[in-house]
Amino acid sequence: MGDIHRLIVFDLDGTLIDSRQDLADAANALIVERGGRPLPSDAVGRMVGEGAAMLVRRALDAAGLPLDAASVPRFLELYDERLLRTTYVYPGLLSVVEELAQRSALAIVTNKPLAPTSTLVEALGLQPFFRTVIGGDGPFPRKPDPSSLRHLMEKYGTTARQTVLVGDSTIDFETARAAGTPICLVRFGFGYETFPAAQLRGDEGLADDPGQLPAIIEQLLNSH
Figure 1 (cartoon, one colour):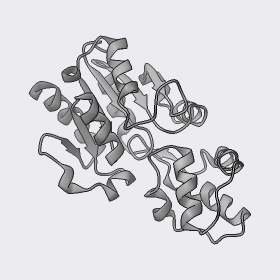
Figure 2 (cartoon, rainbow, N blue to C red):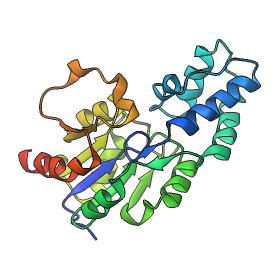
Figure 3 (cartoon, rainbow, N blue to C red):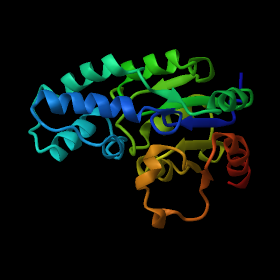
Figure 4 (tube, helix red, strand yellow):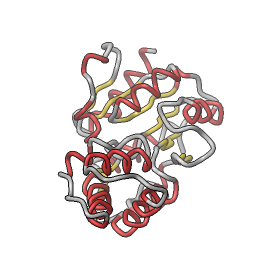
């Protein structure tokens, strides 16, 4: 399954799956438990991307509540209860990753902890297509540190030019730049809403629909 000389690495939240509502509901459940008022779901969505601890810090700060040692563990408990209530794979992406997996090694690198990531990847039918899944609480620093991406390139024997990172946020953009790989940004993902367009250099792939990904990735691999 896949050509080991081509590696495509996907972000999870906002790239493969729309998890915004479940993340927002978990964050708001924590806020309400602490006596605060819930935040708009879109506002919470803009806080996603740098791991659970940063999401909790941002959400509590926006609600005017203090962060303590129990905040992140409690959020993870609340999120685990809501993990699959509304989260779904973006329409069309399952067939896209199935197609890509026929000629490339596929992996996921996310700042989400590995336990909920693994549950989501399996439950949503993504697991058969991804050879490696790396969470934000593993042995590598979280993105935008490029260590996890470099590890995958070494593992699958690809160069930076034979690797594409697909993501939706500034974090993914900075990760690809640090690793020297092409980047494809999915503008349908909720993380792209806050992406500073001035950072674009013109050599990025930009996908407005999952169906565009195979052609864009092919172009990125052939132009670097």
